Image (tube, rainbow, N blue to C red):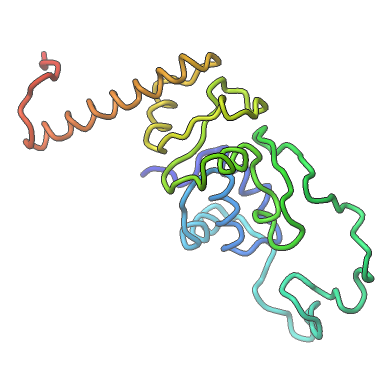
Amino acid sequence: MARLFNNQQEAFIRANVKGLSNQELTDLINQEFGLNVTRKQVKAFKNNHRISSGLTGHFEKGCTPANKGTKGLYNVGGNRTSFKPGQKPKNYVPVGTERLDTDGYTLIKVQDDGPWHKRWKHKHKILWEEANGPIPKGHCLIFLDRNKQNLTLDNLQLITKKQLARLNQNHLISSDPEITKTGVIMADIYSKIGDRKKKFKEGRVPNEGLPKRK
């Protein structure tokens, strides 16, 4: 049975699961890796791998919710004892701050409010979307020279996730941008050959242009 997450993705989940609801974690995973998994899949994965967020979903008997009497989803106790008007937490960084994530991508802070995945965005995605519009569903961006710090439009190319799978499968991404561009073309060719072989096995096309079996 195919794994839902690879080792890198599982390590990311374990590193970021604490304090997040299943939906927040799902949104974070999809944002980080360009996936489209569901909350139900993430919840099942956590249960099967004994991964806990530390959240119980309810308050123990006798406990008072931290946000009782306050307003705002993220304002836990904020109206009473947290920060006075105009004050900011010690670890606060302003909008526009940049940092690297665990995979070496540059993140940039775009807003102060909301969950983590809405406050921070991948800088290369922002750069591309400002010039070309939203990234279509089922697509992703690659760095043509494999350098995640080379944040220029010329070094970014929009491809489908199917193309990315072929590129990784056949090691077609190079440090030379021109070779990577050729690799994208080759990925399409491999996909067409694979589709034709599949149709041939299913008897939907004649065996024309395919290698003969020995």
